[in-house]
Image (cartoon, helix red, strand yellow):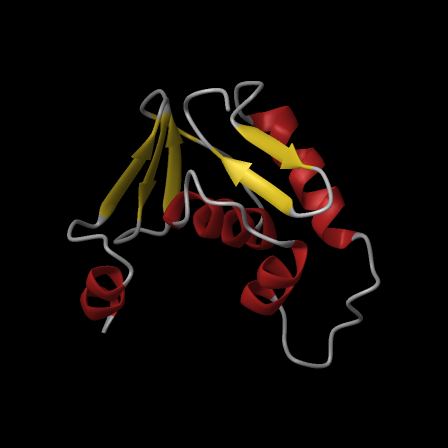
Length: 110
């Protein structure tokens, strides 16, 4: 099932790389320069979603739908908190804010 979902999303391998970050979907972990990155489950889900959609603008609503159940309060600022925590754990500039639209994960500055 995971393999089919990766293929539908355009990912033929279990590993997805963005600069120094590597998402290992088989073991559900993220490596930074080949060292495991210590993430909470929600941080992992946010970062994994951004990695799977790198170089695309991902809205806050898309992230909420991906990591929470349907009844979650969409006016909460938890996504912003997770992104802020991730920015402290990964190299600066990888997660970019696209004002009014969402976030983009990219190894190259836009």
